[in-house]
Image (cartoon, rainbow, N blue to C red; front, side, top):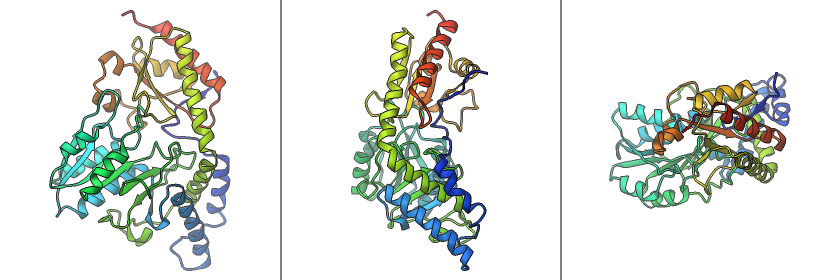
Amino acid sequence: MPNRIYLDHAATTPVHPRVWEAMQPYLTQFFGNPSSIHGFGRDSRKAMEQARERIAGFMGADPAQLVFTSGGTEADNMALIGVAMANRERGKHIITSQIEHHAVLHACEHLEQIGFDVTYLPVDQTGMVHLEQVQEAVRPDTILVSIMYGNNEVGTIQPIVEIGQFLQERGIYFHTDAVQAFGVLPIDVAALPVDLLSVSAHKINGPKGVGALYMKRNVNFIPYLLGGNQERKRRGGTENVAGIVGFGEAVKVTQEEMGERVKKYLQLRQTMLQVWQEDSIRHQLNGHPERFLPHILNVSFPEVDTETMLLNLDLVGIAAASGSACTSGSLELSHVLTAMCLEQPIAESAVRFSFGITNTLEEVREAAKKTGEIVKRLGRSK
């Protein structure tokens, strides 16, 4: 059995030992419902609110502005559907991009089915949305714009500040999916011109099944998950206390280590590219050459198609991906690469490697070497 190397941290990350240690008491000893008024409930609520304060503080928010969710997908759905339904008397036009995560795209498709009009902005060949496109798309009945902070497939960082400032001047709500950016880029919502921002725990070595939506106080919003008065009546349902505690601890660890992590990811990225260059492996980098998330490396090997490459990487113990984990089971071409209008051989041979805290220089170098060997062995003559 080959030594297994995990290079798919953009899909999910292993739970940090400190996170697991922090969570355990709230699965057994402190199991009370945080909405209960007795001591068991108060213990759970205290831990949950401490985690809320820590997560909010990390992104420059007031704790009251944070709504806990079951993950990034629910946070995206909540932002789009909740704001759209609350403001439909003002207008029914929404703007997003063609490269959003499917949590946003499918929410937009749902809104179209119930009478909203959605504009899907194109991107350039680096995966960038341009401010001018947003400006041209805005209409008098535009109520909401959703543009992701950093793309989960190619890593391109979007001009969130410029877009947000333009929308702020016009009183149009702005949501950004920051699930991939959170923990690798500094985010301060107090200075950032956004109204809503989605994050998730399992991308930063926290548990799966918990995320959060930052929401400014003045956002006109209707909750769509009903049943209780939890989360200040914004999201019904008993909170995942152990998961939230784990999320808080993951943020604490991330805050302590973020600078070193980013430095490490950039080094790992450069190492892979250097190995391929030294071994004369034909490849093309996808995404923006300067504005990119440090832990995501999307690269095409035009001589080997994506499916063949991923299967052969798996055979030698290397975990990589073709794009979003939500669509990697599909053989369809990535909607992100399609929107970028890449040449067919490039789009059909793209692989995403994504780095995490457990990766070492040695294993990344080994993965790059084995990738190159696969290209040399299976490469098609052009």
